[in-house]
Image 1 (tube, rainbow, N blue to C red):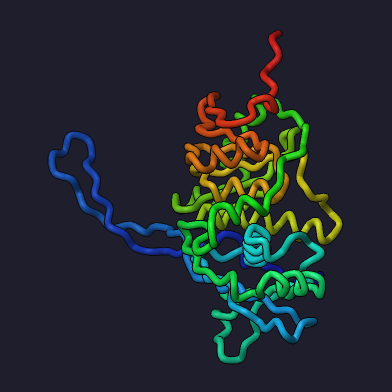
Image 2 (image 1 turned 120 degrees about the horizontal axis):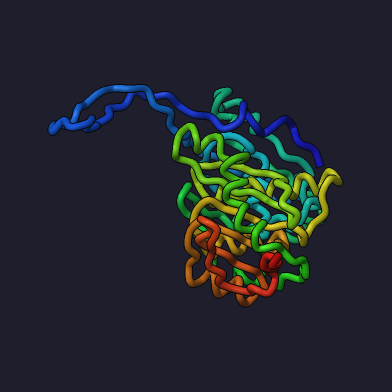
Length: 309
């Protein structure tokens, strides 16, 4: 597997803008309107293309267009394809690169990522009906739009086999760890979601931010696949958990299951489908992780309470 160049362009980009601020100071009865500079989270489209150079009968396809925050684009593309079942592991990826189409200007080329499949992956996709059967559109706020059915999604993920236990105190500390080490863009703009992988021992493996919460998770998943392809990580991730900065949907649970993660923690609520899928597939799903408390929706047996002194 080859990666054409770094997919990170200077970290998380922000855009400056003059805004009006309405504020009532002290005992003043009338609010005061003033102008000040502000930093906004950047949102740009990313087109994900897939090619199979070893399979002439499987032409290049535009798989999706997602609105995302630029940075970690290769990880986002790989992670999205992994969650969609186009890529099943690092051995399915021959190369990842930015587009070099001559009809695109220089800046726009960094908004198109192409993933080349290996021969074995191309053959599997072709047997399943080809790439065109999976065309979809994704916005920064939605997940796996346009998939055939919930049953088709859940059928691609197995039961969590990990027996790793997690100290409850560690899981409760994950959102703070994410804020301190992985949310610099949010601190600057207030407009980005984040996701991170954390080991059972409390080590932050990777954190990514994006204007879309599903994109942040896909970036983390793509990082894991690319690291596994380079021999620096082993999948499934039986000894780690995923923490996200927002609510937990069915799609985010599905992405966690694809990685084989035993624990998923979020600072906000879980949906009914997320809780049901987690329960059916053996995932420990935790929500409202804040202020030393949490809500456990499924499989609490994996969480070890603090030992009494």
